[in-house]
Amino acid sequence: MSKKLIINCDDFGQSPAMNQAIMHILEEGKASSATIMAVAPGFEEAAAWSARRRKQNVGLHLTMTSEFEALRWSSLTGHSSLHDESGHQYKTVKEFEQGAESRAVQKEMNAQYERAKKAGITISHVDNHMGSLYGIETGRSFLPQMFRKVSRWRLPARFFRNIYAEDPLLGSLSNIERPVALASALADTFGVPIPDYLLSHPFGLQEGETYDSFKQSIIDKLYRLPDGVCETYIHPGIEDPWMLENIPHWEKRVWESRLPFDDDFSYAIRDADVELVDYRYVQEHLRRPRVRSAFKLLRELIR
Image (cartoon, rainbow, N blue to C red; front, side, top):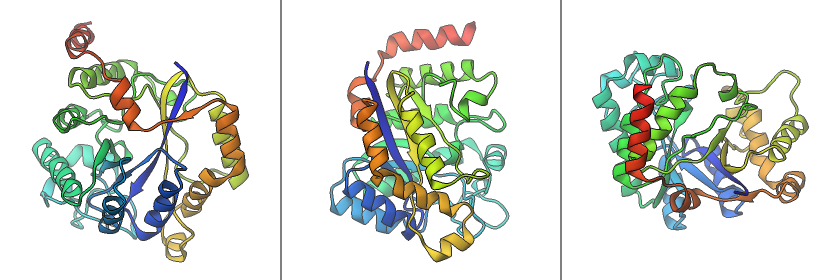
């Protein structure tokens, strides 16, 4: 299989500054897709734009955390187990994993899906803000509940069946091979198509990092992509004075809005023979047989 890449704009609907950047990128076809936050303050603007332009590449960014001190939001269902003492969603994934009740999480996922559908969005896929459903911090995963919902919605989802050893986040985690094998087999059993790899890069500014060094690090990855379908994500935002002052690492968001339009980046995609695809490709080509997948899952559980 040739090297195929999904570039997803996360956090669509978080704020007007994010919306402006992501709408520009999608309008110019510089990324594969975006995923929208149904709980965030900029949702209505992002949803109206997506519905009006009949975009087919806007997915749902299931959001269970609200990490910024200066920009908070609450769940749609209002369940107490989904909020901290301030009445907003938890700031950290660890707090969410420790405090959230399973039934409340499932109802909140439904509510966020229904709000996006009622806004007129043709949802292309589902992913998860900050990986809060993955069980990364405490091992308490909500992936079975998520895959069950996504299966009912008949959509593909962001997860991964292989771990890229060079990935700065996933490649550094120990003893995750079996949990990943179990989770990917579970997705297959539910009939939820997923990409082959998920590629990350640091969310915040790194010491000594500049736009040029950031750009070069992403370009280097294009030449080292593993075969198959990879997804990576960006969090683009425009240069907004309030955001620069109040949101940590906002400079990085500005860089990520600039990168897709950079001639060096566009040249590297062509030169590295990387094909940009979206989740329609995942839906059409990466579904696994459900019965065979169920047997694979059973083998993983008993070994």
